[in-house]
Length: 550
Ligand code: CAO
Image (cartoon, rainbow, N blue to C red; front, side):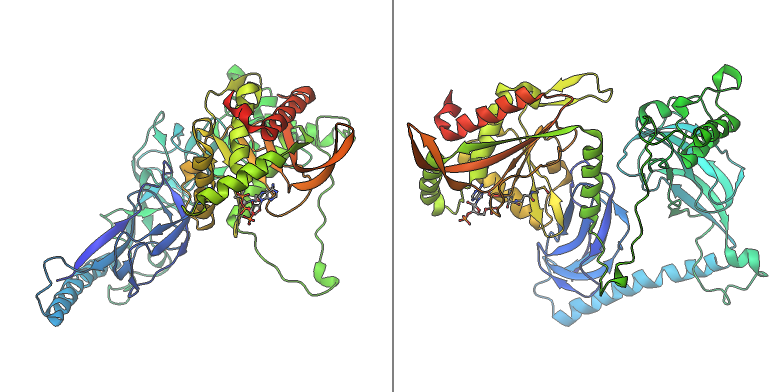
């Protein structure tokens, strides 16, 4: 007899809902253990979920676009039974068919009953709310018995970054509210039970069960429904509006509908004086504020307002043949984060060169020794070690600004991100506790993370917690570049390709192997002198790695 097993999402590292971007198998497929089943993509990484064992796919329970968390069922797999080896194959097959027949036959009567019903109780869940988790409910805007229209706000959530109303995905009558103010919720948490009315029942006379066989949800058994996109208000304000201070917006005294209105207009509630009792901001206050901004006629470049001309929409096909290629999700996310860092951080890049002539000789010797063990030792292992030493020497580089921008958080751990080029775009897995790993361990760690990153096997938790990033283009080429600081870090080291150069030493030019270093830093935290000292120190360590022992 065969076994039917539910295959669930394994530990994906602290993320409670991740989007399915690819389904790699279909019912009937025969798979081996470790074959990839689906691809998940969070805001930080994509990863493939492998089959825990071999078997035949019976049913796939997820589709592209679904969100799924650890423990969520991906599919049912028919695996060979342990105790069945001496039964004839046909008998085993028959028994499977019987089981399947029973399984698939049972829902039919229920569907018929459902078809006769013109209302359905739907469980309304918290939809995809971006990279937020466990957000407090600050307002419950409906109660049992209320009639709501599609898009009516149901509850208001407020994180430290934004407030958002969760709208009804469709019209109906609230049967039961499942959350209260003060609860914390994440994507997928049930908010309430909504009794909805089917379209057929509202637009046509009542049909008989046989005329409307489409399975409507049973009125008693709630089915899950995800509301339409929440009004999460992180879209940039219109170009003519000053940027919204998210940390203060949430604290402004205003009702959810006024917040929503302000968000739609890109108005920063924290800049508006409320005219109602206790300084509460009204819709009119928001309108007046927006009017004032729009009519102030502030000329470009005089401060405050971002007066930037809109980007032109160019029809490139007017100049020749073109092809439109969508960006990958990683491209889009990386672009968003890089743009944000580039926008908020005043960047300066310090260029330097390290004499790695001796180090390269040592690396080659070490590489040859470890080749048999299959370990490839490249320059980046030494760079990681040298950077960890430099971070210890210059603790300001191993720090982040807090949210207020007024305090520096100094870290006593040395986790370093390594930018990895993958077919889907740039991702930055993190090597933890670099200071306590030796060169061989670091070389292995780089090969491991780069390999897994390219196979989409990096867990989201492996992308978190970096203090500093190294971006090495040394394997490719170039003499220098200006990497963008990976916020909330305060500096990033770009490394280009080493080359032989004539260096003037003891009254003569000698050929030395020079490694170009490009250190970009956040000028709010690090000044130019500190940056020059940092790269000088790195250069000294790389020129003579015995210094790492000091
Ligand atoms: N100078 C000269 N040669 C170098 C070098 C340097 N600075 N760094 C590496 N090399 C050599 C290596 O020794 C290796 O030589 P062999 O093929 O002869 O063994 C070759 O270049 C290829 O190295 P590699 O890139 O495979 O390995 P690595 O350990 O140096 O780098 C990793 C690993 C993951 C950093 C790299 O593969 C990568 O993905 N780099 C891209 C980073 C990136 O995209 N940055 C983005 C910049 S901002 O958008």
